[in-house]
Amino acid sequence: MEIFTLLENLEDLLESGSKVPFSSKVMVDMEEVREILEDIRLKLPDEIKQAKWVKEERQRIISDAEQEAENLLKDAQNKIITMVDEHVITKQALEQKEEIIENANKVSKEISIGTRDYADAMLEKVEDVLKETLEVIKSNRKELS
Image 1: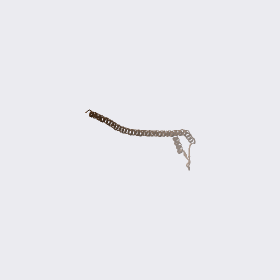
Image 2 (image 1 turned 135 degrees about the vertical axis):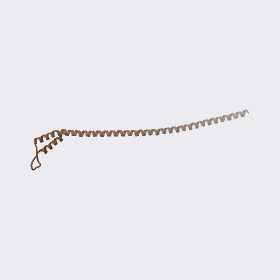
Image 3 (image 1 turned 180 degrees about the vertical axis):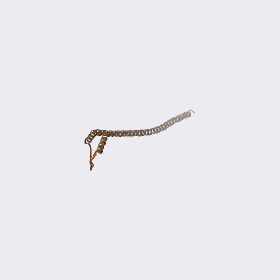
Image 4 (image 1 turned 90 degrees about the horizontal axis):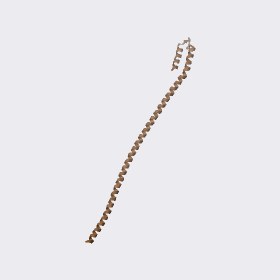
């Protein structure tokens, strides 16, 4: 930064100035001091603008980095939630599968028992019909003998 150089020049000018005897005062070339001060005045706005720009740019970079970090964090949280949801959905699907299989086995057993009971009832009716028919046949044979 040129301002620091100009300030160093001003200090050098003060140190190299002629000392006034019996005091802490120094005699310097007034024109040289004015030139340095004028240069400082001219350079100061540019230096301040540059420093302000650096500060703003620093703040922008920090804000961008914070925003990016926040976005990454949100993405990670969303992925975790999705993974958890998928895990929950998978778990629920497995539970439903087990329930469906259990219900199917239960219904199958009930159908099997119902079919057996129906077949037994039909066979009992056939047996009764056959017994009656056999009785009729025996009775007819007795009558024939």
